[in-house]
Length: 302
Length: 285
Image (cartoon, rainbow over all chains, first blue to last red; front, top):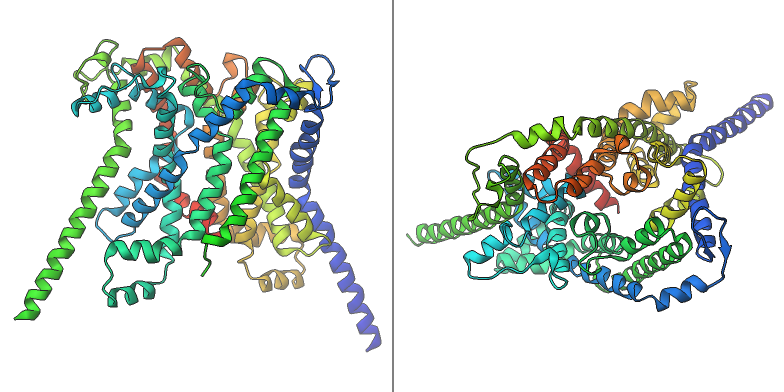
């Protein structure tokens, strides 16, 4: 008996050790990737932010000079303003996505056709979508101004106007952002227990009341998720601005990350760009933390 | 008698609300689809007719010359080939790397497992913008700029998001099954290949499709790392069309249509994959 126990123990210790070996081995690729492409770059980035570095000569340590320059750089203020301005589209996207998802949850014939209509923009590349919308926003021959003229409005010079370029980008952003959010909302709305609606029906609630008083609070975790992800995405929005407007006119559609790109890859100011990257990164983290702290007030996980 | 009247009123109300919903959905769909229709319409016109006022939705006559230019003069074929060569290997290799890690995190017991997973998860919080420059510097020092390597190597190591997604899915595989396999003498690699992969097929395909699409649509990566025009990806080529054909919108739109077609095909084939994949991300998130 004693012998069998010892043997079993030996085998199980061996088994655990064998387990550990495979365990570590299997996570090796991902962790190597983490060290090389996440950890090292983060540390390097922090270091570069304290240097003057144009990639060809070695980095020169200059302490907090970059950060001081950031405060004095007018374009920093402007690009951050632009970034937040563009983010104003977020509430619109969320509201529209929610309402559309509610409609798309109904059992109606042809519902998958309608869903597809809203999902398609989601899979298309930023470049293709931007080209498409550039043509639509064209001031003389574009579709948008034509339709506006049909209702008597003289459409502005959209992408050539410092005033209207960013609103144009917001419109384009809303159009493209609906699909993914609608999918999330539909999944979430489907999970709301029927019984809640049934008791509301007994009380004589209208469809709108049921939507606002039952559905909306019940999907608040999804709303929270969408909002957090949208904020993170909006702070780093860049590609579509490059293709649609080239950041103009007069930097009115240059976002923070776009300015970062310019500093790093056009002006070869790697150190300055790194400090800018950290500021953007810090803001993202702070906004995310604030979102999480505030979530207790309005998100309910029933 | 009154019952009939009440039921009639209720069914009229029902029909009215259904009609209302249809109208709203039709309106919304028209708003969503019109840009695409306009894009296609423009691509089938010639230089003069694109500027006709009022705008003609149906081109008359339908001209395919823009597509001709796209394929012959502009060598968009090269863009397609380049793109597929760049994105296919990392999609498979990266998926494999992530799946191994996901299996390990979900079913293998080893010291520090949960702490390590947490560290990996933290990278999801990381704004990508921070790593962009140092990564470029590293690749630059290795003389890999203007090659495809910076676009292919990082992805091959897997991604935290993919690991997270797959781990959630693998956890639904009952651990009794794994235990039984171990008692049968199966090693972990064996278990991975014979049990995890077949059972996790749906999740793996989902992540594969997402990864492929992300690579296909990627613009920033190629923008930073590719300089030679013969190495350009499709998205990069599309974007540079603007410089060459700034107001030949028929050609620009033809390019955009050509670029979108593969994504539409993938969407058409894998619709379910998209919807379920994104839904899972939201629910687990």
